[in-house]
Length: 300
Length: 267
Image (cartoon, rainbow over all chains, first blue to last red; front, side, top):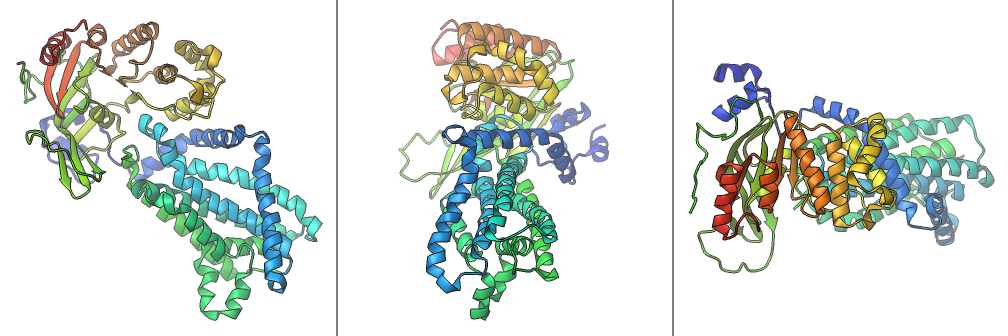
């Protein structure tokens, strides 16, 4: 029953050398521990434990505000303060170079940017800040970056809802084109989850990266046209034209503005780029994260 | 000196009943840590070459070719000095720490209970029970149903709505043990987790571990308290420098270990 049995029942693509102990283990129906699961069974266990991710997302949202007096209100207060601050500063500095419909432009930009950068920051921390959980419990690690994205998404949904209620005060009234924002949200959410997985693994592989995160988000902020128009910039400097498609953050910002702010529009090409970025980020993020699955428990 | 009695090697590897089906098989497992550390090493005796240096990189051979078979009904005490590889081996069996060589097989995913920080320290004990329960695979309905018994087992009813950062380390371990025992685990690994609990809780958890082992389970208990090992375990493994020095009847191994370190079991 030695070699022949193992060849027929080998749980891996390539069978290791058959030792007596391995043979005993496999004939007794034991399965290997500490080996990377197959993608399909990994996805299955991810789906089976999804309740854990959602509960963790909910609890960490509550915990993030539990120690402050204003509590949950901060979720909306922070972006409101940001819009006020950027509106005042950049509104003054930019002067006539301000994008059209500056305040709605800025509100939509800040709300979208907060979601995307928040997923990146929280995703990067998702493994390291839950180290005690990772080191003591065995569960599909993908639940952690997923949960980080989910809690950012809930936060984002609340802020967006308020932004939509506020927009009419700045001359933007609901129209049919607002419906297309659902598509933008879906693409941005998929993109965010991928980004979150990518960041989660990168900070566990190179812990030095966590020092760079603030600079990366600053770079994202200044290169994505949160407070200025990328289109105007590329008109002036045509060699920067790649920014309209190479920077996914600005792609989602532009798509959201096309849906919600008058005077802005998106072409089919823009939507395609947005879709492509979402798909690309999700698949690379997932595979990159899955490849290191067994290593997250070992934090040096 | 009780050197390498019962050493691993083909036959007679398992001193406990060899008829029960195996639950954990460790086949020549190696665990090697790579750690960046700057600074000069203090010169040491060259016979201890577990830490190797290349520039700033230190390679630590935590586990060096360990093999063992654990069977249903086994309660295995794991003893050895600090740094002998006990926790590394247990984490490898639990699948929390990847192995760098060899193979480990288990009948089901083992539950690991170790000393360490609270799970999510800003959340209340109750929320940690819910999260911990979901993470080990209980459903929301099962957790709701078992919440009371978990709280009672931990004996923390008064403090259950306080954030876990306010708990003492003993209280944290009580809660973690209470969560882990809520699900019938086939394999339970307790890594010094009970050492910070008070004697009343230790008795309760020792009884629970025996119960789990009786239900065709396997329990690994890492402890420096030889008395506690003798009270719970039928078998003991002595790890030394990342290798198994002795594997056999709990009393024999504990006595040999006590003799080596110059104490008695009662101490």
